[in-house]
Amino acid sequence: MNEDVLNTSIRKFLKTVGVTSQREIEKAVREGIASGKLKGRETLPAKVVLTLGEVDLTYEVNGSIELE
Image 1 (cartoon, helix red, strand yellow):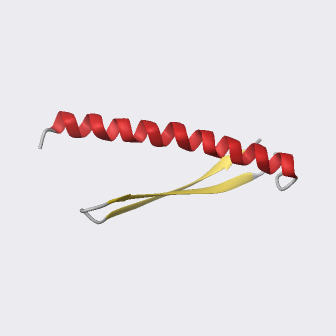
Image 2 (spheres, rainbow, N blue to C red):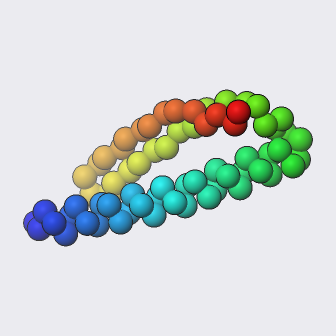
């Protein structure tokens, strides 16, 4: 295994996840406010589940997204 290749690949994956996730969260919040489902002052529970095949990794991160 090449540690540099592994590290670069992980960073690329996580960058993609971060950018894409931020866009999707922003889109969902804007739509929630536009539809009236959200008022724009909530704190929303958030969860990400990371899985990695072949090594049976499942890792869960819990947090919250504050709107105000």
